[in-house]
Image (cartoon, rainbow, N blue to C red; front, side, top):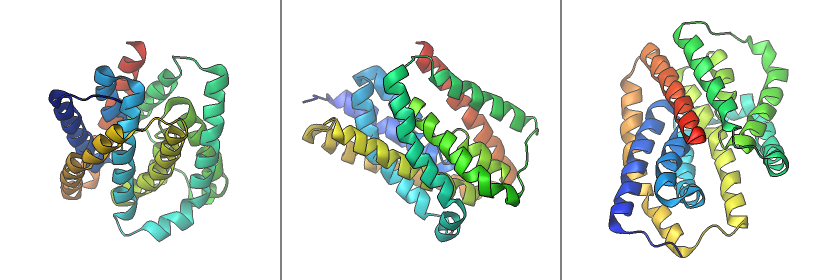
Amino acid sequence: MFDFPPHLIALVAATFLVAGFVKGVVGMGFPTISVGVMTAAIGLQPALTLAVIPAIATNVWQALSGGHLSELLRRFWLFFLFAIVFTWVGVAIVVQFAHPLLPLVLAVSLIAHSGLSLAKIKPTIPATGETWLSPALGAVTGVIMGLTGSGTVPSVYYFDALGLDRHRLVQTMGILFLTLTIALGVSLAGQKAYDMHMLALSITGLVPTAIGLYAGQHLRHRMSETVFRRTLYVALMALGLVIIFRTLT
């Protein structure tokens, strides 16, 4: 049983509030921020366990918000399916060939893509390429999710290169992250990582998470497409730097 003092509960609430806000603005970053901050205080496994329920909730909200759910499911169902299946491949690789520096691959790719995008060097993908790129890049996303715990690469790059507007882009990422986070939750449950105390604290974290998410979404709807893209790339670069810091320290 984990015992959380009041000051630590306040830290968890503040972390979920900030992580929810970032998630609302750019559609990603909740697990990296929340787990990154809480790991320093309570350890990795408890941090992951606490973050799963709020992360699933934010992704449900994100996946259902925007009004394009059926359209995006029809268009990208192969990507989502291959990402889910190959997440287990990535996990199997980690079990057999775990290496502490694996997250650096993800971090470098995040920073490189963000830098090129801020410099307005970005590839475009014609719609005809989706037939084979969706399953291929879905598989790569799944493997990297299993290896590093993040489904950002190359999914965000792919959807961004297809020219999705900011609302479709954020909703598509919500659908993807929801399925991958549920897979993580099932895995943690199978390892009996939850107890009643942890479950209660995780559910309580839904309140600050929802407040932050709502505020972030409100800000995103007031942004122009240009400002949103710039904010997204800066957030991805910051995400990469956070991963490097966490990995090397």
